[in-house]
Length: 367
Image (cartoon, rainbow, N blue to C red):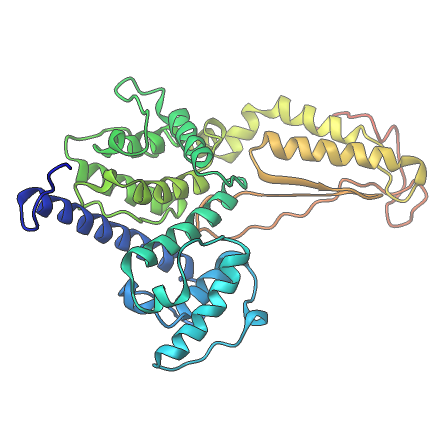
């Protein structure tokens, strides 16, 4: 039988220290992640000591409601109190939801109430992965999720000759890849000037990412070994991936030139796009033009996709609706744009009279 290192030996102490460091790092990252997800709730629930604050069930209850967009009330009534039996009852409600969705294995309500640090972190990691995968396209395999994040990272770092990213841990030790990603997204607004100090690189990258795109800082830039734990790196990179825009050139060009100058520079393309849309006889109230309305909706959908909008969806019907959104930062104002691609019939008093050829684009008087 192989010799085992006795308790108190340097080898044993180093292993214990590595475990303690990992628990400490995950505790900090998961605390930041939970608080970020809960920050907009009205009940002011906030975690200061993860292993203690999670025991009564209210933090997890609020977190799951926030992440799922659903009320957990049908699963049972939460009880305020300091008794262990009350905390277990609350946590049973939480686990009813987890067992239906996240599929927690080998962890029970009592483990969380009793403050088992390893199992608390395990439950939270399973929860993070489940909802992170939903955010990034419904991937339910951890290997596929990591591969998708790595592909996204490489897309933004491959242009940089000093970087060759092959993993989500050690290749980030310098902090430089975060600067490269931001520079690739916004070349003029986020200069690529890495230093030899990983802490400096991380602080500048996270400050820039938060101010421009609302990316939360989950990992600790003061931790020299932040990169050693995938359970710290993956949630952080997932937030970058979720919040940074994919379309770089057009957004940066508009920022550099101003909207008026950009519009003038792209006048011909914009005119062609508008002409193509206007050429479709999308008379919404005429049954003979149902297919034309569908064609107009498909054109709008294509234009939204080309413009870099996210979640572009067409809801089929006699006059299909087209929806899309674009998240550019948590702290940015919300702008709602509504437009109608349908046209009125020639004899509709509300639509006015048709003059000339209404479905042929033309110009005049500088228009």
